[in-house]
Image (cartoon, rainbow, N blue to C red):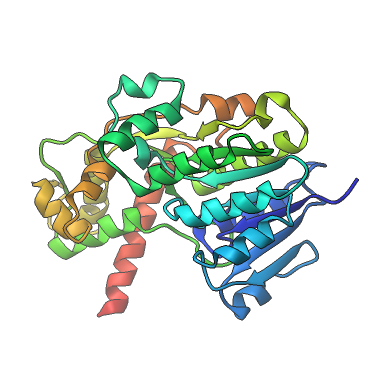
Length: 339
């Protein structure tokens, strides 16, 4: 049997680097002999990633559509972690897979932001793609548009597409480059700047979280099942949620306040209520919609499909709470280095 060839984008990133290291560590007989091609922008990145199973390929970026299509056509599986917002690169990668004469698989990385403007009742629907279509018709959003284009582009072809839709991601990554995500650290840095942690007045945002290594484990489990020929998994249309728990943003900022007050780096453990406009100015350069989607949504995406595959998160609420403290310490160190 020919060796399976997998193309991975985003290997130098937080998610993609962790996915690659998790795949390389897998002992599944379907995965342990896979050869990987990874796209990188610089020679020093290639030098750090090259191994007996990993072949780096230097490219100019996701707008290099001709190269993406050509390279994808030479692989059995494409795992796209570089960006969920870049529609053209997803189209090019799928176009390359469509040139193959055998079945192939495309695994796309998206995010639950796509559903943040849905109602709680909407989120109980089984057809998430249809829900995304309805939301997109009301309020266009580029990451959601990419999901929809992925599914329409594979229609009628031998390419089977699956979309992994994580919630807020946290924890240390295991790739060789990007190790963390800045969301909580940025909020801690904002609290240090103003002397007090803040939350958005009259909003009760509730969203999911998943540790980056648990997220990467879902890619491993999904690929293993696809290569095993599981007919229940191999058809297109699978959207996989992977929330390991939920948190309220107000409680998260309260935790930041407690950590900062305990070490006397904040004036008070009491958090401050601010308007959404002020939050947008402080957290997103004035983009109110981004803040509303990221911090005011109320939903919990249940990982039923992922669990049906056999996926189970190893990290829990204790790890999430510990990460808030870790992020505060990182923000504090960054502040001291800036002085």
